[in-house]
Length: 249
Length: 353
Image (cartoon, rainbow over all chains, first blue to last red; front, side):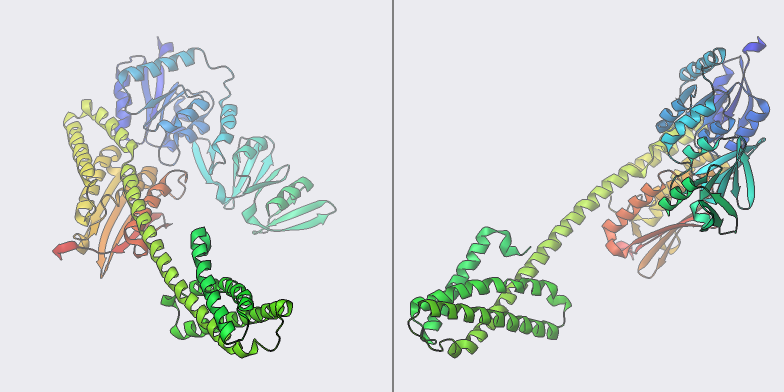
C-alpha cells in the first residue's frame, strides 16, 4: 500500500486556505501532507528537500507567484493550482497543471482533482519535459519582469532592470547584476524568448546587453566593435549585433 | 469655422444685408461722386460684396482677442488698426473696380472717385468696426454654449465615473477569498465562521447603502475601511495590521468609498507580497481649506509590477476630478519600500461646522 501513498505539499500564504486543503485531505487515507508553506521560497525549498508526489499551489503569494514556483520546481512534480482568480486557468493549462481549483471549492471537486493527480502519476503525460512546455508558453505571456535563479534550495529573484548583461557559458547562461554573477541552466535561445527585446540586445552570439548600461561603442578592428559599459566593462559586438544595436539606439 | 459660413441660410442673410449696403453706397456714389446711377450700381454693389468678405476677418480678430482676457487699450488699437487696414484694402479694390467700369462704359470722364475717397474710407472703417462688434457678440454666444455643453458633459462623466467606480470599489476576489476563509472556519472554528459572516454582511450592507449617497464623513469612511480590514485580517492573520486616524478631519466630507480601492491595493499589492506583512496607515488631516488624506503601506520593491494597481488609482483620480476639477489631486509613489498615496481635496464639513 505504501506505493499508493501520495505525499503532498500545500502552498498558500493564507493559513485558513491551507486548513481547507488539509481538512479535505483527512478523508483520503492514502494522502500524507509532508510540508505546508506560506510563501514561494519555502515551497521551492520544500519541494527540493521532500520530493513530494503532488503540490497544491496558490497563485498569488509573497516573493514568488505560483507560476514562478512551478518554473523553478519544474521537472516532474504534478501541481494543482488553488486560487480565487479564474483568469489564470488558461495559463495553468498551458503549463500542464493537473487541475485548477477555484476558491472556494467543494470536497467533491477536491476529490476529483486528487483522482486526476493519481491518474497523472500512474501514466505520466507524454513528452513530459515541462521546461520546454513552459518555454513554449512563455512568449505568449510577453517579456518577463524578473528572472528566477535557483541555487540549490535557495532562490534568487532578479528584476530584469538590475541585469547589466548576460553571458553564455557552455550550457548555462550567466547573469551579471549588481557586481554579482548568477548562473542559470538555460540556453541563450530560450532566454531570448523571455527577455524584453526593447531592453536587451543580442550584441554577440554569447551576449545579451541591457541597453541602459551602454556608454559607447567603439570600432575595435575592421568589422568588429566593442561595447563599453558605464562601469567600464568591455563586451564584443558582432556585425549582426551592431546592426541590431543601432536599430535600437 | 466661421459661424456664418457653416450654414447656407446664414450666409445668404449676411450677403443680403451687404447688398443693401451696396445700394446705399451706390446712392452715395451718385449723389456725392456724380456717377450715373447705373454706373454707381455697377461699382457700388460689387464693392460692397467684396467688403463683406473682407469683414469676415473681424471674427478671427474677435476670437484672437477675447474681451475678458485682453486689455481695453490693446483691443481698441488692434480693432482700429484692423479696420483701417481692411478699409484701405477695400478702397484700393473699389478704386480699381470703379476705374475699370468707368473706362469701359462711361461716356463721361473725370476724377469721380477722389471726391468721395475719404468718405468711403470712413465708411469702411465704421463697417469693419460694426462687423467686429457683431463678431464679439457671436464669440461670447458661442463660448457660453460651449461652456454649457462642457458642463453637461462633465456631469455625465461624473455620473458614469461614479457608477463605474462603485462597481469597481469592491474586488470580487475579495469575496471569493473571504468565502474560502469561512469555508475553512466552519469546521475548525464555528464561532469564528459566524463572526466572519457577520462582518462580511455588515460590510456589504453598508457599502450598498452608500451607493445612494453623494458624500459621507471621513469618520464613516474610515469605519468602513476598518470593517474591510477586519475581514481581510481573518485571511491574512497577523501579517495585516492597520492604523486609521481621522484627526481633526473626521467631520469633513468625502465621496463614499473613495479610499476603498486605495486600501484594497495596499492589501493586494503591498501586504500580500510581504512574508512578514506590515501596517497600513491611513491618516486624514485638515489644513485650512484643504483636506489631506495619506495612505501608506510597506511594499516589496521586487514584487511583480503587472496587475491592476493602476486601475484603482485612475478611478479615484477620475472621481476627484469629476467632483472638484483642478482643486483636488492625488499623488502616488514609492520610497524606501513604502508605497504612499496622498489625496488633497477641498475640505467641506457641511452644516455642522
